Length: 325
Image (tube, rainbow, N blue to C red; front, side, top):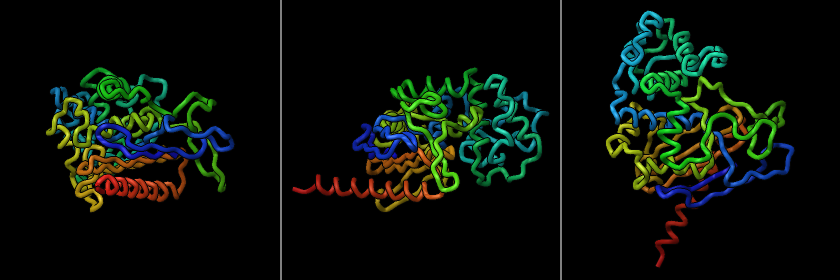
């Protein structure tokens, strides 16, 4: 497990505990890579916001406007779904592709479009505008960005987000080389015992949940959403759009209010079923509280939330101590 307290300036406190792989004695380090799972979604939304700012895309652009060759290839009920509806899980598209691993031999951009067509062939089973958490929706948003730029989602993330923010550790898929111990392995519990795994979601799912990076580099990104952090050229209006929810969900963030945060919080969790990560941002405090663990079972959410609570209390104690004469 790796945990951190962050601000718009970066990491304020950082710690780690545990081992990289069950059965080994190699300890996890503060600098190790962690898998973000669905916390990837805020990064995808941020990258797309940059394209919108530049005029390459529009929040209200419909699927058929962005990808006109889909006419006749998908059900007409999906034609009018907008980019912003996809990023806020209100496009009425299925939660997941029927088979994320299909068409693995064709290039990634074409593979994602093929999955899009296959999974939107039938009329929408969910009402457009209603909330249904959808990894497929984020892949489709990625397809729209890929068509607008001619680049893969992976190349866009590197060019538009990782490089400008100095996120040198950021990448895609399971951390580390296959079979090695230079980075942590993920773990699942089987028959009551932890089973180490170097595995990840299919590459097609990338825009919804396939990024890894160090905790320090994740803090570089999170700082964009804190008071004086890097804005990636989006300005206040661009960031405001990303944190203005429809219901409770905005551009890759669940938006709520908490007394300890003195107002709004931005939160999300992510898991590829072998890792678990969770983040809470309190913009009014200029603080982020982040935890990731390289194992996943039915208690992972509860345990990570407990650690987040502990980090919040540590921060509160530190603030009180600093205020004492």
